Image 1 (cartoon, rainbow, N blue to C red):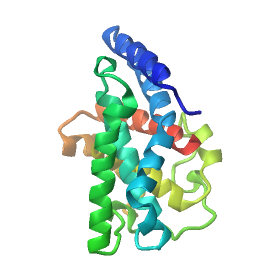
Image 2: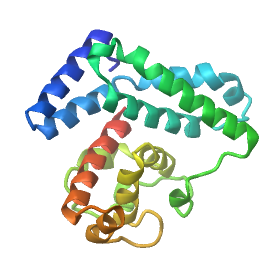
Image 3: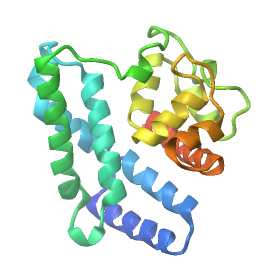
Length: 211
C-alpha cells in the first residue's frame, strides 16, 4: 500500500525514536514499511526516465527497477523528516541512479551482476529451492517467490555487504555455502555480526518480494 507524505514522516519519526531507544528490530520494521510503501514512486521515476527506451526494448525494465530499489533503500535509510517530504528527498537519488543505469545500458548491453551469473535460468523455481530448508524467518518469502528473475532482482536490491553475505552463505553464486565466520572475516566483522546482517537482509527481501 502506498504511503502518504504524512505517513512517511510519522514512520520516520517513529523509526528514529526506536533507534534512539535501541530498539533496532522495530526500527527495521518501520523502515521496511517505508520502502514497501514507496516502491510506486521508484517505479514511476523509472518509467519517467526511461519509458521510451523500455517500450522499444532497448533497456531491460528489471535492471532499472533494481537500481531504483537500491536508491530508494538508501534514501529511506538516510531520510530525516525535518528535511521535508520523503518523495522530494528521495527523487533526486532515484533520478540520478536510474539515469546513470539508463545511460550505461544504452552504451552497452545490460549485464547481470557477477554473483548472479551462475544462477539457474528463469523458470518455475521457489526460494526454498536455493535456500536451505528450516531457515527461520523465511516462510513468508518462500511462498511469494516463484521465479529466479524475481529472486535476482530482490537480492540485487540489497546493499553490497548484505547481498554478499546472503549470496555466499546460501551458495547462490554456485560455489556452495560459506560459513558466516569466514564471510564476516572478509568484511572485517564478527560471525555474529554477519548473522545479524543476514537476518536484516532476509527481512528486507521479504518486504521487497511482498510488494
